[in-house]
Image 1: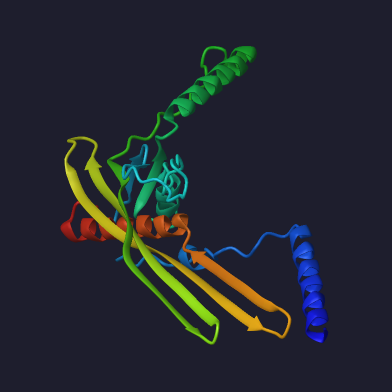
Image 2: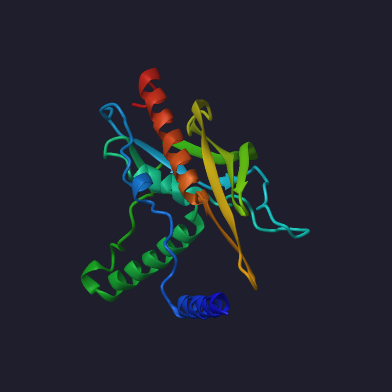
Length: 261
């Protein structure tokens, strides 16, 4: 009876703890991105003149879907648009390597420039002293190099290890899985269309799962408890690291070969 009362009391305490945990509004701790964001890109000194570069759509061409136990999963394994990661990598460079101009939303940019031109002309026409000389916007800067990036592969379970051990009804299991994401980046000369350089970086995406089972036998009852947890490396962080690595390689090779100048 004493064991039964202790067991019932433990169940009540555990239920209260789960109820309080469900009522909290704070999100669970997420993976920290500080390490990836604060990594310095090792590069040689900037060239005498920074190149003006543009990028349009940086997309995922691997076609991989998220793993799921259902029949069909429509969500992709990696972000469909990796342009923000490429822009962030370029912006994190020390000034002097690249001047990035907007091209992904160039239609919206041109439309906004038309609106701004109409507004400037209206102000000039309203002023009698400046009616003859309507104000105009400066010409858009022309890019010298086009950066073309894409996710070319996402390979699942390239390395996998599982294991388990049990003793006297108490057991522990674990699984370690590694996926690979490959990002390719090339620089194309705008004037000639020549591919000046290309780089490709493969980044690992790791997942770890642990579980345990505890069995206790009492005189009038049996307790069987199972605990488990998993941690997965965020795809966004892995893609960001791959993009930064590809950009670093491309600039290093460009400065070494002489065309990044």
